[in-house]
Every structure is written in C-alpha cells, then in structure tokens.
Amino acid sequence: QVQLVESGGGLVQPGGSLRLSCAGSGFLFNIYVMNWYRQAPGKERELVARIWPDSNFDCADSVKGRFTISRDNAKSMVYLQMNSLNPEDTAVYYCNLFRRGSDYWGQGTQVTVSS
Image (cartoon, rainbow, N blue to C red; front, side, top):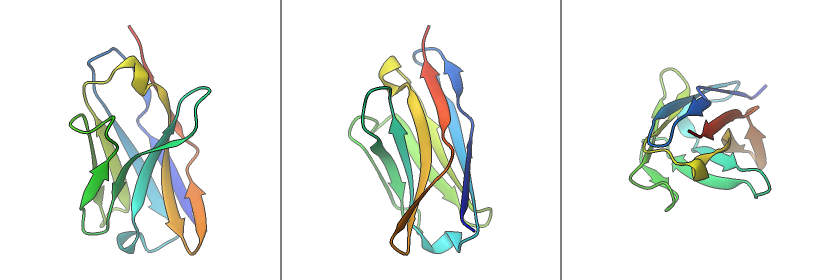
C-alpha cells in the first residue's frame, strides 16, 4: 500500500525558511519521479517541484532560486527546502507520486507565511 506522509509545515514570517519532508512507503521509491504540489485557498493545485530518481530536478518559475527539492533514496524521503518565503507561498503542500497510471497524494502540510 502506497503511503506518502508530509511533515514540516508551519507558520513563518516573510523572508523565512521552512523544510518540508515526505516519507514514502509501499513502493520502490528509488525508481520514481517524486513531486511537490501546493494548493492555495481558492486556487488550483499547482506543481512546485519535481525530482527524478537520479536527483535531477526542476522547479516552477515562481519558486526558482528560492526552493530546492532533494531526495534520499536510501531513506525513501523527498524534501522541499523553501527560502525567502513570501505570503504568496501560503498553501497546503502535497507530496505526489504518479505510479502505474494513478496519482498518490499525502495528506498535505500547511505552510502559512505571515507577519
């Protein structure tokens, strides 16, 4: 059974940093692309960052230079380091796996950027 469990969200002031973690289980982690999405109130869910099994990655233009995605295949973990946060980054952040034609999602972790 595939499980994705996010952690690390919280309240942070503008300009601050947070590191999100996602623990994957129930699948062969090291062969899959892993994604971070976010959904702000009243907006559609959007892809934030994607990382390939060899740790090549890409980020959305809105977060490039501020966010970094990484993974530890030995621990079945994927991370999202978020720096220079601003209020527009406020959203629920989700870890995502697309496997065998299905999307799998974690429960999400709330990130709120506010003074």
